Image 1 (cartoon, rainbow, N blue to C red):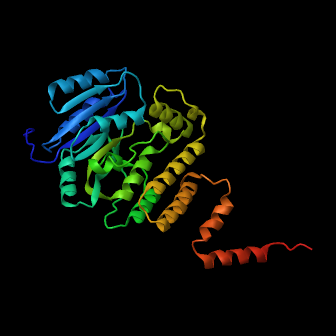
Image 2 (tube, helix red, strand yellow):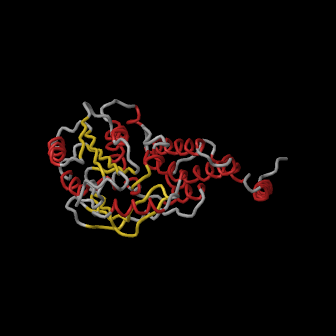
Image 3 (cartoon, one colour):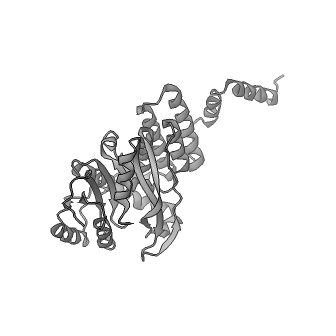
Length: 326
């Protein structure tokens, strides 16, 4: 493979790692085996204390495409992923990678071909399969969130109502579009919020081939929500003490809803579409995560205002059923 070929758009891969020595070598081999001839790999090590540093320095010394940066202290997962983007200077396309997943060699070349041919598409991601800590294949993952041909509001609604695993976070993204977002916010569900923001800016396309293998090496967290919450907060926030550790799972999902509403406010949607997006977002948070408003009955009445006839009929029905005073 001729890695000196600079005639194709530059792709930057941002690999954010923390305590990843167990799977990191396999991940680096998978990324460096990409058949696309013009990419750089920027590794951001979040002050790992295991063998991560030695593995990264070995690969950086042996491959000019690899650049290794190490934080002096644990910044937290969110800040480390953002740092990977910021340190990956230039380039037309960007993708984030984690230190335990795997990719087929043709992923980047396939994704670049789609993006070069379709200016409306801003993110390309492949079908994914879940693998365990031994690399055994398990279930195909269901994130079918191709939004080609849809208007911005429809893209946003399709995303929030159907997203399950956020595998498209590891897709290939137009760098200039990603730079227009707030990147990953220091809040719960930041990958959902960022992808929602991107969905309002352009189309997603899913490749039909399986090219991404997402490793699930914490299956016990599927059964223990509190364990998942505690580990996730510790990972995302790093060494900084935080009152958020005492927040309930519902509080954290309420935080996600708040950020989703901020995305809508900052978007270029029309006022009418913003209203529809806000109503659907509140419904989504309630139905998906059981996050309710302080005055949930009032919200349902407000939502009825979108259809005056329906609203009026509901009011009449309530009045007819209400007990009459003497």
